[in-house]
Length: 231
Image: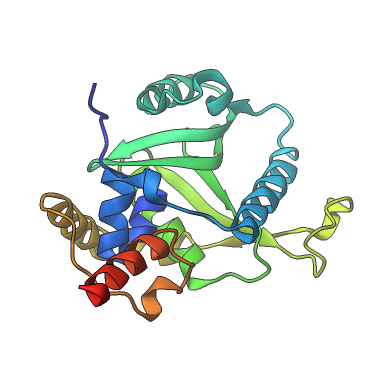
């Protein structure tokens, strides 16, 4: 059964970095290789995210309910948000324009609007974090009325210490800034859809393989270069 979506947040960010990496992420993700350091960062990011979610003790975790059945995330999310009461959701799913996003924390306010919190473990508010949040705002705002959209990042100089949570979380409201990027995001999505309608791009390796993140497909692309050189 085909998925009801084409892009996700991670695939969109990958596509901004490299069209070939986007294509591989969609059609051949088994080729990805992650270093031990990358896996350590993923683990720390999840730890920081869980710590922030603990400040919402009554939150309903959509991922715990549905596991890998991602097509059902938007359906269950809508059911829970349509109830006329406040509710906190973790990994709430929203689908628009063939893009699925899962929001870290969603708070449904008494007036029915949403407060969104996207959690990042980095110690600075990077442009990549903002692009990530902008896509989420674009999708969610087309599904539901958003009151505010905040990015939460790590305010501690020692990232490994999450025991004292009082100063850990730096919360920045980016609602207006993110809303202003909707046209740009729509154009980016259209370009990515066009890329995915064709065969694997022959994009050469370069500095973009390392920024803003080390691409997990570097070994695959480098192997192709070595084969060409041998020929």
